[in-house]
Each structure stands twice: as structure tokens, then as C-alpha cells.
Image (cartoon, rainbow, N blue to C red):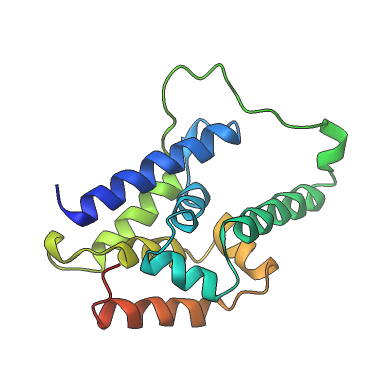
Length: 161
């Protein structure tokens, strides 16, 4: 198994843990993003941290996005009480549509599988034009275009960590 394969397996596994924690039956791009921020010392984690997105800040940004989306519908999280993880799920959450798209975008950024690096996965997550991740980044005041440029520079310069 290559270094990238191990990294990808870790991100998907950790993303599934994040999804289950949130009671989601699917692993979406935001769960993958949280998993990336938890991989201390990797190039993608360092890039996110340099933009102010460590694991806690990313979770807070995603929580703000959730609250903002609820308020747009005239609903408040407080009206539902505390959310509890769904412990009735017997199997691991499946990869959802935004999770699959993030992986596809990352994989499409190279011509050969052997050229994939961890930063390609982050590139795939950040390239989403719509959805939870770009809304959360905007609410957190993160310049997504600048972050994307820095990730692309990291990939171009061959930083594999």
C-alpha cells in the first residue's frame, strides 16, 4: 500500500467517525475536511492551519454554517435540544455525494494514480464551488481562492507530506 493509499484510508476512516459523531449516514466533504485537519504534521493539515483552520476552528466553522443554514429556514438548533450521535447505525457511514465528488476532483488533478499526494485530496475538497464546505469557509472569513492557490503551489512544488 502506498503512502497516499494509507493517507486516503485514514481520511475516509476518520471521516466516517466524524459522520457518525454527527449522526450522518454518509461521509460528506465536511467530514473529510475535519479528518484532514486531524492529521497533524501533514502538508494539508499545515496548509489549513496556516489559514486559521485547525481541527477546532474547522469544527466551529462547520457549526456556524449549520446554524446559519438553519436560520435561513427560520429554525434554530436550540429548538431541537442537544444532538446526539446516532448509535443505531450498524455499519460505517457510506461515502456520500459530496465526499465522492471531493475524491473525484482530487483524483482528476493528476494524470497517474502514482502521482497522487495528500494535498490532492485537500484540493478536491476545496474545489467545491457550492455546498457546506465553501459556505463554512466563507463564514469563517477564509479566502478560499488564496487557500486553493497555496494548495496548488504545494502540489506543484512536490511537498508530499
